[in-house]
Length: 475
Image 1 (tube, rainbow, N blue to C red):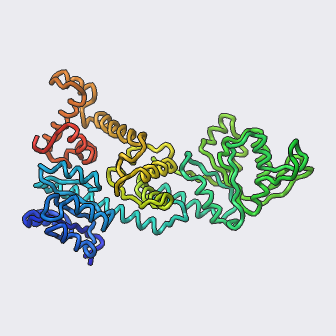
Image 2 (image 1 turned 90 degrees about the vertical axis):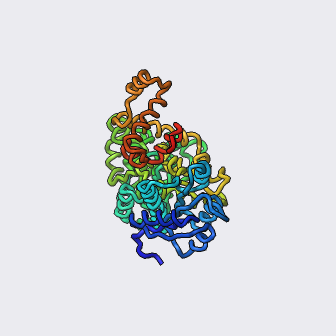
Image 3 (image 1 turned 90 degrees about the horizontal axis):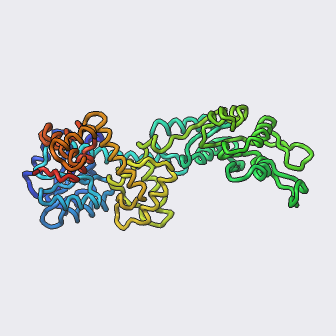
């Protein structure tokens, strides 16, 4: 039984009683409930009842070793972060373990502050995974809206308010953000839900064909019109008409659309009189219609007619806190679609996703995840499974972090680094950055977490740079 839902629980797995005693004392002092196991086999026996939020696992133990235990633990309780404990000589094995899904690693003897910092991050990760599962359960897939940021809450609130009304809605957002999902939700929440939801893509057809698609035509209206054809307005009668990419509609057709909206009547091509229609209009665009109006490409009166209520969908880069939740939801969906078991997501994989700006938004994310799911040969998705542009975006972000560190005075600026190169002889800016990192470590007594905090970067980014420059604890 858990002591309290607010008390984080850790299982310390090590065959050395003295180390378990020391680590246990540090973590208990930090507010953890500590459980112990003297072997991997014993740890696996405890797992069903222990319910740990994190696991601290020794790499080398008699019997089952750390790597084998890691695989068994992740099968038994997927999503629980495992931090590896390793002696200096087995750091390479710990790095291999991280590639196989370990959350992080610590070298013996672990610095107390570093131990607490790493375990607290592991707990934050564990909590996020648990919250994501619960939110997925509560939200359900039918809604199509995955996210807990304030922007997405606002979208949901607007849909709840506007859905039951007859108000015309203008849905704004970049390509790939989910404008059709919003439209479906609005239609589903309306009294017209049992009626049809008819879509017209205003960008897909030339003006003359778009007009006939919207308003229809009668037999003999033009060459080839061998029968009456009702337009989308008539087909949507009693339901909702979705005008997608409304910003692409030609000006001459905008006047006819405005008349149809005002009079609730359409005039099919070749007809002798108007036809009444009963539809609710929802329009969507990725363009800034205010600017289009100002530049004469969109009618102002039509804009105000459409924009009774505006719902703006945020881009993915504006709600990156939703990324873990979206990833879990999409992988579950894609796993069913491709008949592949849903893969676990390593922290490194998530970090790579968070380092990319996602210009194609959720649609691009879904495509990248499907590629990773199909290509992955292991139980855990890794950055190597992602498209090249995503990996390149992550590298760009790391470089941007370095530039920002220089800008805000954390690291020397490039011209100062160049001066350092001239004074001390390093052959590149990399060497100057290496020296700056050494100085920062020296100021903080080699303490990695304090150094990372002072530099304004994550501990993982600091570790990456230390490995890059060969700055081990011993050096």
